Length: 335
Image 1 (spheres, one colour):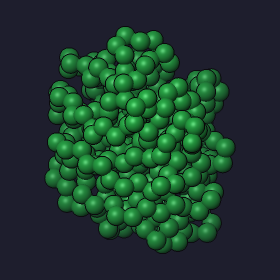
Image 2 (tube, rainbow, N blue to C red; image 1 turned 135 degrees about the horizontal axis):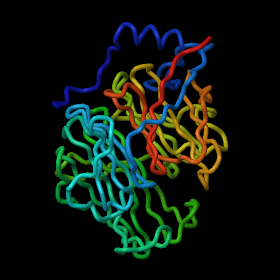
Image 3 (cartoon, one colour; image 1 turned 30 degrees about the horizontal axis):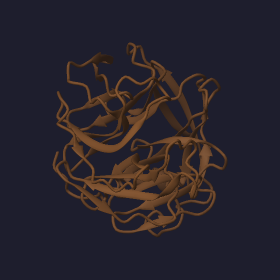
């Protein structure tokens, strides 16, 4: 799929929907919120009989190949959704811990960013090497990993946290930071030593300038209709149009809530956020963005499922995969 630049026009039906509902961050490209009185979003998470996945996965959708891909967080296995069922692939494992997946329109492939760790370590007991790498999925196999430039100081590591699409060229951008282990949570000045940002075009890593006050980021997504990225970073929200960063007004991110997953649903023109909890044993909230503020979705909540989300055009909704289960969200607007 060839990158032709961000779309600056919306389909008429989508534009009308957005104008009526007020979806979109305020000031995403310098403009105000689109409506003062948004409608509510009512959603239903529907579980799919898609077979079993490992409990901890990352997912991404390739619109060119019409593939929904899942990787085990450990990097040991890769799965594709085939005929509504997950099928384990024979591809060689990524090996390192998978930190993020996203599709690159410029490369035309899904990109995985990984973090080196000691082999065979138990969950939450891994020693990280600080080596960040990227591999691309060609539909059947992962490419050889390409190592990011080393920028960590001795005793610290560079960790990629989230990925999005660079609106200016369709390549991926990777956001992370320099950390000092052990580092949970990442406390600025104690074990978090500032943000890092790279561009990756499938062959080359290029370090780019990140805002100096950017805090550890939890989630990011790309809006192809407006050509802008949205990020949630430690209680703050940001937009990125490929050439400038803009911190969004207070209240753009849910207060005191751990929303660590974002996806853009073009069928309703909304950014969808998914909340996680420490144990994943209570019903987590789903959020959407109407005007300048995050608004809880009126939904059937799912207890016991923390996971990765991605929009799948074949299924026509945002997919949630985690704890060995798979759901798709059906959403409608309500007065």
